Length: 176
Image 1 (tube, rainbow, N blue to C red):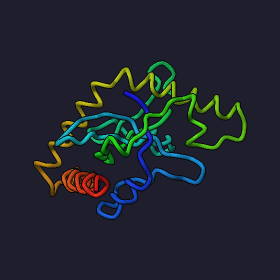
Image 2 (cartoon, rainbow, N blue to C red):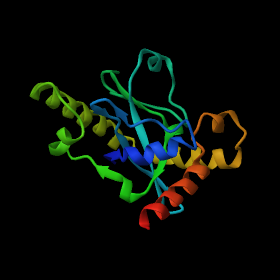
Image 3 (tube, helix red, strand yellow):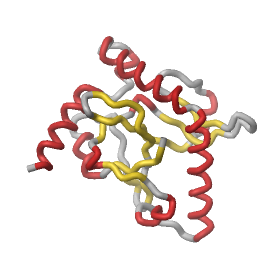
Image 4 (spheres, helix red, strand yellow):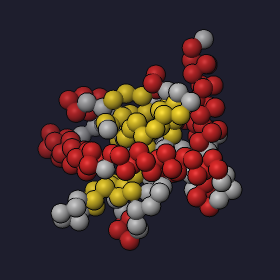
């Protein structure tokens, strides 16, 4: 899987319909997404990555949450909130290339930039080792939310069907 940047206008559009959709812009920083987790109705799903917080250490991996943790050292790098995965049209996504990262994020020094790229590479190594697990989880999560829309699990997740409809509507608007 690769790192992606979701167009901020597209995420602003989605947030109007589902408040669980996360912001992608934090001042001079961007929130990266990982993908493609699954494809449904011609929509590719991407999941945001979040910085690890102290509360995450006590949480267990489950269907809608996965820790990116070094198997040898136990170091917790980040988390993936699969419940916040969103469908994104190809026209609203940009694959992140490390040599172009300064176009999307400000750094105070070359060292800070190098450290950030190193962090992304470490996280990607972990992700590459669990890619099939993440894709399987995403598929199961998606299906469970459709089958049981009133469940506590579905209440923690983005409204996938609604967002797919809005994704198609957005595409139709920008094509004209």
